[in-house]
Length: 340
Ligand SMILES: [Zn+2]
Image 1 (cartoon, rainbow, N blue to C red):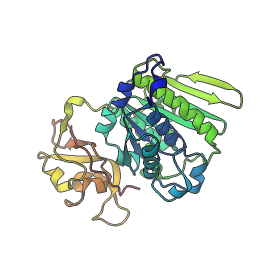
Image 2: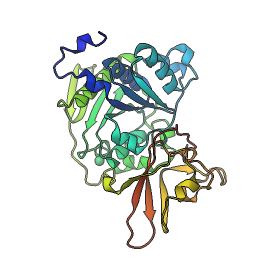
Image 3: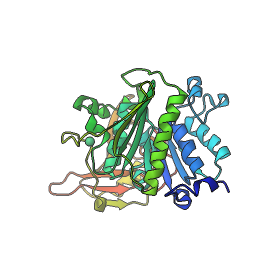
Image 4: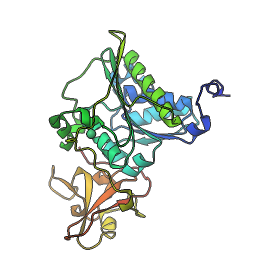
């Protein structure tokens, strides 16, 4: 009965939605609205990832927040409201930066990955991670009186292809995802976030149903009552197109709760494990960052070094002529994070 009005919609498949798992990175104005709309549509599982807590200024736009949520993690507040209005939807909460909260295998296996992030650096990071595992990305952003909806199918131009080299390089800054966007705080309202989020959600549903959608950038502008479609070509200099060869990924009976010492037991002579983000070394001087998981203290848990649940870890072989390989961590427990 709940979904009776969906049945007449051409192409709608309620059972397909019930089996779908959508990952939403960023649970602010866009993310809460997209999560609400997809849950109300009947999507069976949502994974919400955001490191922030609810502030009073979020109440004017966060579709799932109320004043009692101030100070609570955004993912927890959103999950609590979703449990009330859409109890059939399973919500996984990841209070973390996206690289530490959502492993590559989870991105790979999701029905769809949706970016509701609010910095360019974070979008670039997510675009790169989607490319690593060969999945599409649906992204959105707002402007004062409009916004953009961007859909990048796997294998084509990515979010980074439309940026300059210097902007793309922000992904290499370990603090970038924790800093405000260099363009500063922009004006925004619930009316505009709901508009962009609604378009994103309708696009997400069509993608899930396997129906055609526009691949590229759609600009929405309420000031001029205008929409504009753009496509940018694949930029041969864009460095975000590395793909992990699926045949080189081996499942390991370890989760991100395992220790570095347990991970090292899996390595062969000459091999070292490389993290995807820099971490502060719990055993080292304050402020020391590293990317070689193999160099971290043996008792350190991978999740405390910023390794996400179901992460795929690159194993570098330092011996001449030997190939690198990848190991895939088993499913949650929840990840923690000491990254910036
Ligand atoms: Zn690209």
